Length: 58
Image (cartoon, rainbow, N blue to C red; front, side, top):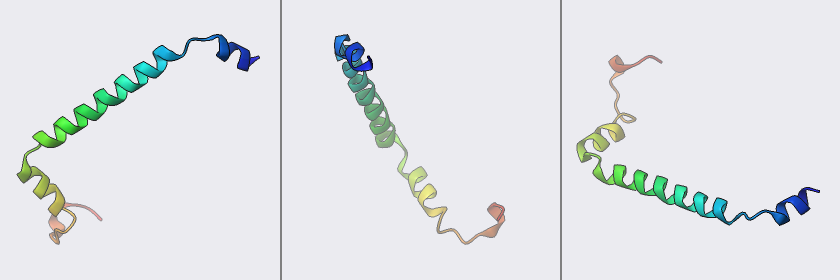
């Protein structure tokens, strides 16, 4: 029954919408990544290596 129902449906708009949503999210992440300040990225990368124990709880 489900097979016949799905066979009769036109699923092309759903696949096109999924592709457009994927590209929109991918472009948004890429643009945000490329526009991020390099100093901020360096500070965030150094947080893991920071030995200062005054900044957080353990």
